[in-house]
Amino acid sequence: MPRLPQATRESVKEELREAFDAVSSGPGGAGGAGPMSVLKHSPELLRRAAPLFNYLRDESSLPQHVRELAMLTTARAMDCQYIWNAHAALGRQSGLSNNLVNSLRDKRPLPRLSAEEAAVINCGTEFFKTHRVSQNTFDAMLELFGAQGLVELTSLMGYYAMLAFNANTVDLGIPYETEEPPLPV
Image 1 (cartoon, helix red, strand yellow):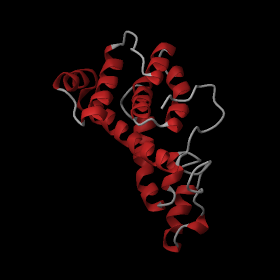
Image 2 (image 1 turned 180 degrees about the vertical axis):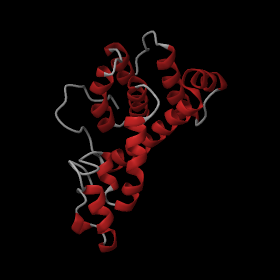
Image 3 (image 1 turned 135 degrees about the vertical axis):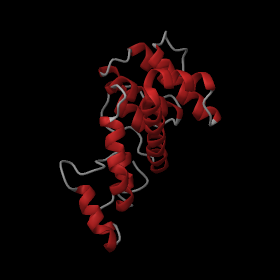
């Protein structure tokens, strides 16, 4: 059970209700019940963050399997049950192998990786451990994804780290019924 109740129109300051209405319009409203919903407690923050989220998650120049692997790598590094369980099946559907997803989840030695997979995992692993990325990893990302893709990849991981920070802080836990085993944390 999350430590913070869902934000409602009545729970936000009156001067923020217009922004709340704006982020809540449309099918399901921005944020649903996941980490983005935590941002509804600051509707103006969500109003500004949502377009970036939508671009990075859905419109980036990076292939879908690369984006999903970046989200999973970030979820694993941040021990974020919610994001992991929301994206593990999507990662598999995008073409990531069961062995890769399961090994990443369980922190087991990874199977043989494609150059793209290695670049994503190396970027996330290095950055979340050392707060830096080695020259070799940088060069591989630049060669594989170009400057635009490199920036989008690191920005996607940074954005998902922010979402994981919020999800873990309010203890969102596992999002819904899932066949995915929880992260061992």
